[in-house]
Length: 496
Image (cartoon, rainbow, N blue to C red; front, side, top):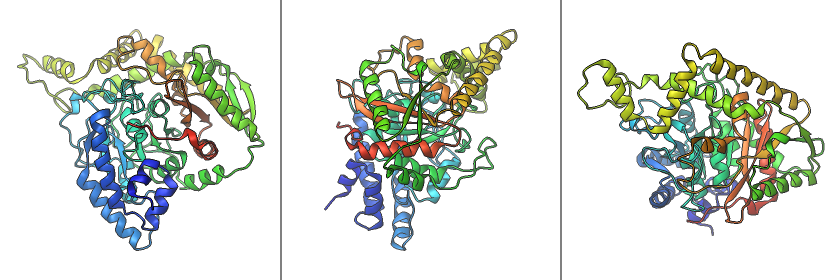
């Protein structure tokens, strides 16, 4: 008979759900075990910043009562962690920054309130790059996160804590945020499944803002079915967020599961953009991505070469837009109204601003604020921000044209597997290039999923990214679930 440890280590969402419903395990047992395992592993990975023990156990007890009364629900009683950029009432929300080191959330983010309604115990707040600015989870004020596949390597960023903890099976479900690849890239480097939803499908209310036109909350889990189950709970219209304009039909899980049982993909067209298969891609990554695409082809999908001519400008376009929005969003942290206040004796209000922001923000955040402020400044706005906005529209049109010919676009998620800690910290441009395949998705507001399709010679995970047209999130999850069902050896846990 399987123990709670077996279910957690295996990470199979359907088996965990069935075990809870059949009362083979309780939510309280599963939650206690998750807390114990997460705390033990955290000494090695530093994936989690804060544990919500009592809140989680209270929710687990509530879930057990609901299950005992015959209630059902995809997330009912299954523990979950959320990135520490997402507000959980009465728990710290730091954005991994000294600026918010002592901030306790006074209310729940919309996604958290929906998780509470589903009685999914929130067990921890996950580490991240400071204010979600980074691709390696090395900019956190609370220390870097380590990849459980190899503790000398990065887990990816900015949602590296969420990815690392799921990869090590501290729990099977987590939430991250994705501004330019921050769900997909760490999912790839840690060998899990991560969905960046269509912009506007999930509320951003109660999520610390980085770049408001790009940020999106999404699931990071052991498999695509888990992601779909979360999407049924967290997505849908929210009056607190004017950009959240999609009516949730709560059908992600059912559609994803049905798709995973397909015998043929005849009629499905997969696009391969020549811009995404360059010589700069690591050989092992290229080989495994090609093998995964060959699998889809073997079950009936048609592979078509497409052109996305403006995607090559994504990196420059993204870093002008995201830094400009960051400059605006982070202006509120001034030492007076919000955030850390310098203890230095200030001779003027300007000195207070300077000292508080200089001491409260890390180097990468400062770099992006300065870049964004420059791009928005008088005399440079037209040359930088406005030009980037025009390029963004051209990138969106490229995708619109492509999706008239194909159903999904496939590419590597990352051009390389997990790199060594400290390897790219002194070269920001090299670090920014880690997201070269993911940035365009956010600029166009599209959905994209990353899931593991193999391992390199050092046994490090390799992710395949599938991008879709707006609101086609379920198709992407279905294709990921189909692959995972028929290639089970690719979906395994890291061993610490």
